[in-house]
Length: 274
Image 1 (spheres, rainbow, N blue to C red):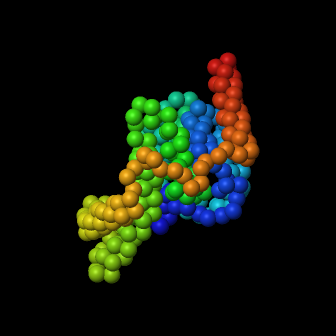
Image 2: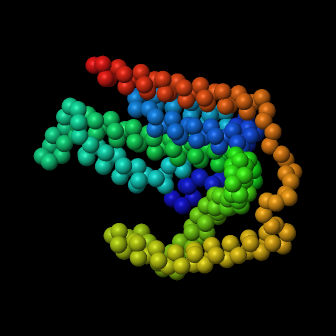
Image 3: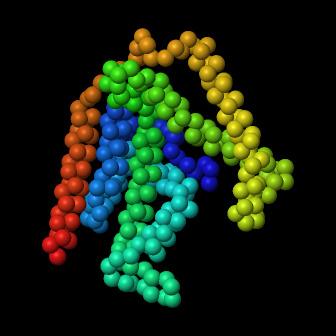
């Protein structure tokens, strides 16, 4: 389960998505995530599915590798679906067994929420899988550059975000090693109820925090040894420059967003009439 989390990892490949400017991937990912919440129709989610499937195909990242990251949110996904299915009322009553009642609006809401949550994870993972941590830092810093006028430490903020994102797979790998070491010493983490399993995690959290602080200290010393003092006066070995494919990616994403918004308003207007 620990190794199934793909957010923060990078998958090397030679694809059009990998070669895009990191600013384009960040902005287009945000547009895609927003588009999931401005629609509430099956047709809109069909367009989102086609758009996401096309991006995955172009990125050359294996679908199995992307879907593997969904295993970490299975419990959250099931909880969301169950809560919306049984607690949302409205519309025609579909199922009535004792105190269990399922309404049309509840079924519709739980399906849409499940799709949103799945696409949120896939869309976010796809951005990190196709962008190196250094490029991601440069992209965030460039997008937040106007905030320098109000004396906001943009470079430091971008660096912290990139380091935090890069540490996700490192800490997950460290957690997996600690769990295997504890199991080899006779620790039982598989059996028992929820409270017992939670208590069994305590011997894992302590060495994990110690390891995280040790890694942070080593990273700080390494940055100081390389004379890192923030973003003042720093230059870029590979400056970010927009190319034709970047503008094309912006155009396709904006057209997708317009199509989703238009369809959403059309469906809402049609439902209002009837």
